[in-house]
Amino acid sequence: MSQIDPNLLDRLKEFVSVSELSKDGRLKLPPERALCEHFDMHRSSVRNVLSLLQSLGFIERKQGSGTFLKMPEPVFIQLYFELALKLNYISVDHLETAREMFEKEIVQAAAVNHQPHELERLEQLCGKIVHSTDVLEGIQADYDFHEQLAIMAKNPAILIIFQGLSSVLKKVLHQRRILARQSKSKEAQKKTNETHIALVAAVKTRDRDLARQAMHDHFETWNQQTMRPFSEIEEASLLTD
Picture 1 (cartoon, rainbow, N blue to C red):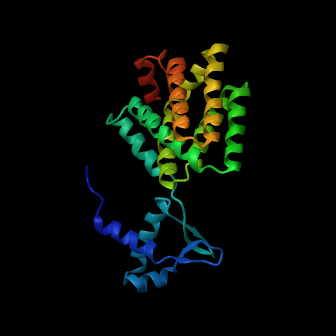
Picture 2 (cartoon, one colour):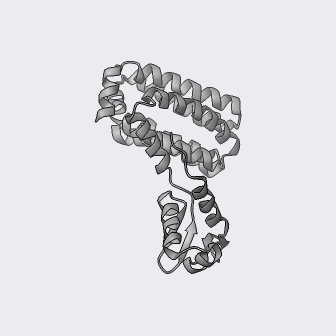
Picture 3 (cartoon, rainbow, N blue to C red):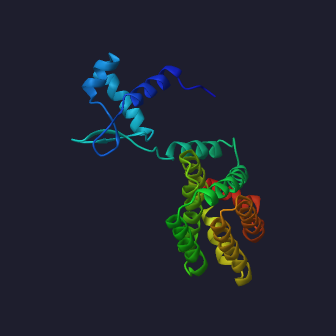
């Protein structure tokens, strides 16, 4: 696999390093002319670097206001995983296993670092999962529930990776999840709901071990109730859709 040009990485970091705090508290890059003078670069070259930073999601350019640093979108991580799936470097099972391992760490951090209003949001999403009668609404609430845990972990790196990984799984496994939810018995649905309720209760205690165990139990129930009935043939068909 080819490596990214280190000179390009250095230049990107240099551009970010000259940002200054704006009046509204945001980090703002100097105007293009100032960047040209500072780095002794042609204007076209400066614009190329800015365009690359923008495409990677690290800056936001507003007409009349300037160029600001921002939290990058997970789209480039999502693209990496999607291409790796298409090229058969990794499988859906690899991604799901990684996500399970990742979420067991996430929920421990969420238990320790969450704020009361974030826990309230988690409880609301849990209520949607439990009481929703619409399949798509329930699935969306489930994704939002797990993303909320990542937010509560208070680690931007975790959030970016989680969003990139889970967004790919959301697309790839969407139809499978619909079928699984539709085919569940009331008893199976009740068990799945109980694991979400248990997760909220464990996070509320701020006990890392309880939270990790609750997440482990959640995925065990998910694997038993929804994943195992589906064959590898169905998985392959989902990847080619």
